[in-house]
Amino acid sequence: MDVKDECAKIMIPNVFTPNGDDKNETFEIVNILPKTQLIVLDRNGIVIFKSDDYDNSWNAQNVVGGTYYYYLNNRFYNNEYRGYVQVIK
Image 1: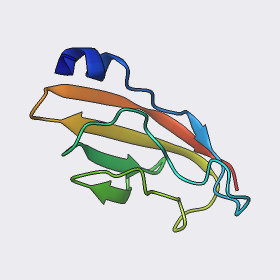
Image 2: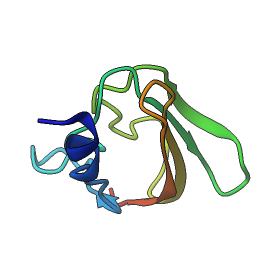
Image 3: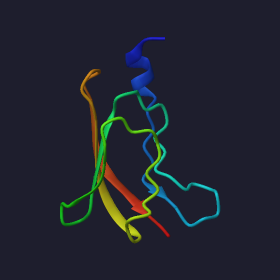
C-alpha cells in the first residue's frame, strides 16, 4: 500500500468524551502516521498539549470541556491538518 493511500484514510474526530465511561476517552486519530506532531490550543491560542510523536493518548485531563483547536503535522510525509475538537466531560 502506498503511503499516500494510507494518508488519504486519516480520520480526525471533531468530538470526544473523556468522562470515565471507557468509551471515546482519548483524541484518537485513525491511521495517524508515526512521527506526527500534534499541538492543541485553547481559544486564547495557549498551547495546552503538544506531542512530537502523537500516539492517540491525549485525554484532555488538564482542561475543562469546550472547543479546542489542533494543528497536526507530519513533516516527513508533508501532511498538515488544522481544525477543532469539542471536549465533552
